[in-house]
Length: 239
Ligand code: ADP
Ligand code: MG
Image (cartoon, rainbow, N blue to C red; front, side, top):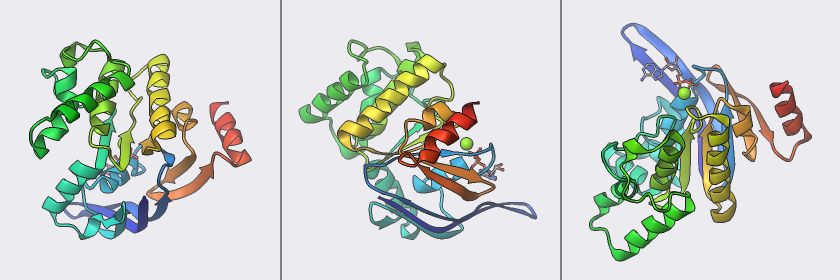
């Protein structure tokens, strides 16, 4: 689903060049749930932005669902992003004065009118993220956990090939974080949703099939849930 080769990203500020991603190779299969962890500033968000077509690499290839993002013109990339990708962020990024259903419907407006079929799908999503009865409630009146549920439903409304999540539980307490992770892993298991999640939280990473450890703009280690190391790594990390 995602294939990245020799991905390099440099930021230039005045005379200074900073290489944030230093030649990354990465392969994510359809239906996988992958967690990316690593120190602050190691380039995790930058990688996610590139995978999501929100920025372009300095060098290297990014293939998502067999399309080369790095070969697209900006307009083409925007359309691809809207049709094929879903994003969730630490700070939810909802439109505060719109209701739950208006926020979720928002990405669909670019493709024309809301049909009955689309409205039905929005209501199904509201139920599947556990927000029944809150359809008409304004986003700014919801709790953090509820706002992230709306953000997840909005990210899934276009049936994305990949759901990209940048610290989705970063603003939530443990109980609320767990609810969000259970929700994500339900979509992963039931709908075979491909998910790439950046997280600081080893507890959150425990829900993923693979753990990618990032360090200074390179992939330091990839640990698979099937390996004995995974449990050991998680246990060590938490000790
Ligand atoms: P992480 O998400 O792992 O904390 P980021 O990808 O946000 O790390 O940032 C990695 C490095 O890239 C940081 O040193 C950050 O300052 C730098 N950086 C990120 N975005 C930009 C930008 N748009 N311009 C210049 N530097 C940036
Ligand atoms: Mg970040």
